[in-house]
Length: 134
Image 1: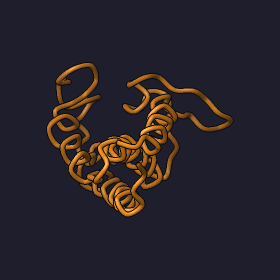
Image 2: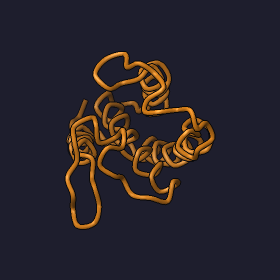
Image 3: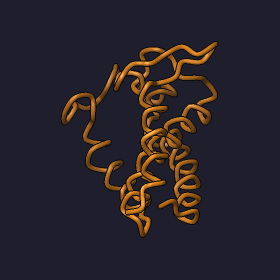
Image 4: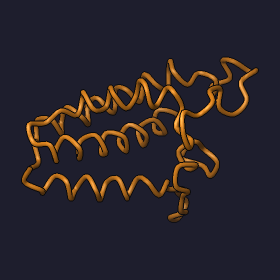
C-alpha cells in the first residue's frame, strides 16, 4: 500500500544522493582522475560493481523503509530510478548510449532523449507494488 511520507523521503533522498554521487563518488567523469578508463572496479556479478552491491543497495533498502512490504519494495525500485535520472540532471547532460546505466538492459531513443529501458520497467513494477495491499 502506497505510503506518502516514505515516498517523499525517497524522492528527497534520491535528489540529494544523486548530487553527492555526482560531486564526490564519480569524480573521474569530471576528469578529476584522468587515468581512469571505463569502470574502475571489477563487477560482483553482471555489470553490478561492489559500490552498487555493498553500499548503494543496502542504503537504498534502508532509506526506502515503509510499513507495507510492497511499498518498501516499490520505494526501493523507484529510488533507484529517481537517483539515476537526477544524477544526469546534476551532470547537465542527458543519458547517452554507452553510459553505465544503459548497460543494464539497453536503452531506447525517445525523441532526442536516450532512456535506459530499466527506468520505465522499474517505475511500472514500483507502481504495481504501491497498490498491492501487503
